[in-house]
Image (tube, rainbow, N blue to C red; front, side, top):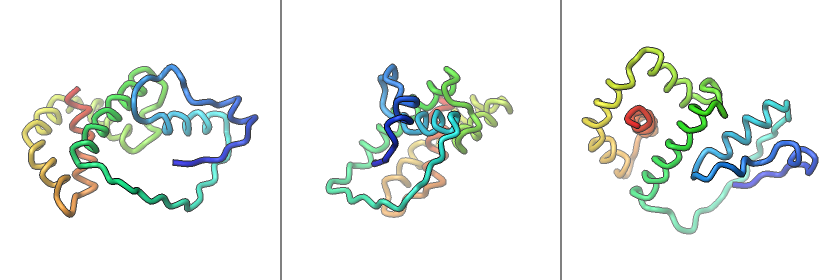
Length: 137
């Protein structure tokens, strides 16, 4: 949500303005900083949401963000090994399981969404939802 960066670094490593989609701009920015060997210090900086969005809107943003993530991978703007999500996707592709995961995703999708809309959603199932979604693209 917030970050502080020295002007000289930001002039050297900026947000990619050519990207016109929602999601993962921050991941790409952090990767570009890493490539420039910029030290990043994370601090506790809690935020308070005044209006939590519905699960439906959240899942739509998740799909948009997943589309963006796949674009970054396929266009070699971000390496697969930079995030656990990317590593998992690469493993699925390397093992030639993308079609199988896609089929399983379409079968399990209603159950995954039911869990994600519940009072106690599972982060593990959310990760499976995201992985299944990009495999189905």
